[in-house]
Image 1 (cartoon, rainbow, N blue to C red):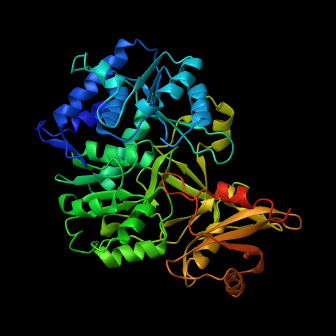
Image 2: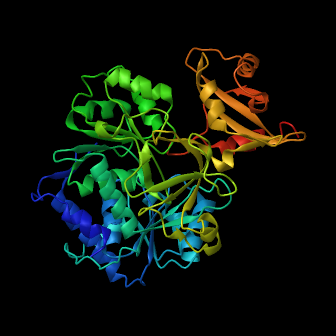
Image 3: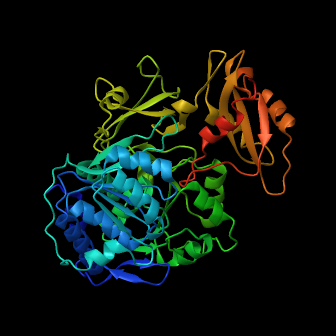
Length: 506
């Protein structure tokens, strides 16, 4: 049996009446509750007599019942399609039209417009699921039996489709199999030293790889209790550190906790592991966290198409956790750095990152040409990320290939420039983007966020950079803003910045 659900269920503790999930509203769900609720929803889905491989599209707020819906989709053998809760009408129209889900589940408040889109696209079933244990999905599921025989699935069968953010053209649906997700979860369980008694604070969204596959699968595969936050709250999270051992977050969450006076070594003394990912962690945040808590954040790297690829070591025998790097390729992952001609670059040189391994996806949904384009002849996936590997094997991500600026024929890597800018006095963070230029083709523009209470002089900043970097790397203009635009996972939306400044030199 290669159904991912079967492996997760096999890891439940023998005492099914012990607490599996404790919510921020004071509810406690036992492992038995999780099993029974999942089975009832699986029975409901099975009763709809959906076709083989049917997609279940889900755009709902975070809740334990939403986890049951995910597990039920796996258990019944269908394909889970999580959608960001921030998506609006045009985006939902595209996803529903492209994926053609048999079932759509949405928040009760959105039923009017979502159901209209779904029915027009040919979806036969639309249910609602609210974050207060309400909605038609649970009402219908309550009429079904609370046991279900897990559907047989092969490792190569689809388990989920994740749509990529689509900052360059339309979003692509990454097809992940039962085998992809299970292999990755098992690797991380070993590599991060999950152990009996571990408790996870789950404060991430569950429509994304980090919260759904890395955090959730990790806890379930270890039979570990979760302390569940529907929405991240820095004060309350720090208060719960003494009841937990593991926390996974995006860099923004660490920055927000560092702003809390109660964050100190005593508050974090029971914790074993802090993991960061989904966006680059500033060295300053890495160092401040270590100083304030005594813990070294473990940074890792992955993407929708591959789940996790690299990680700083948990076990110090394998090496130290290095800020600014994403560690080593995980066991079973092959990673190489190549130039535009497809040749391996020398150690420490920058190039395109390509990977192969058990977590690498099956391809893009209904995009065979795009799939073929993104894989090399020998089966490596071109990640679209640019980076380097040092002489010790540590991988550093320098940016996305689409963020590369080609100015006057020279390659300019924004992350390199940002690294220098972020070290300057008064700078909290920065973003460098390329915009069209009549002479150079493209030039860099930098947007800087000052530290609280600090003043940043744009002209002085450019002048300082000129003493540190080659002239072709120097941004042509600097703008000071109070914050950078970000998506829900904390990634800076450079496409938004490019759009804002594209006419600067027109």
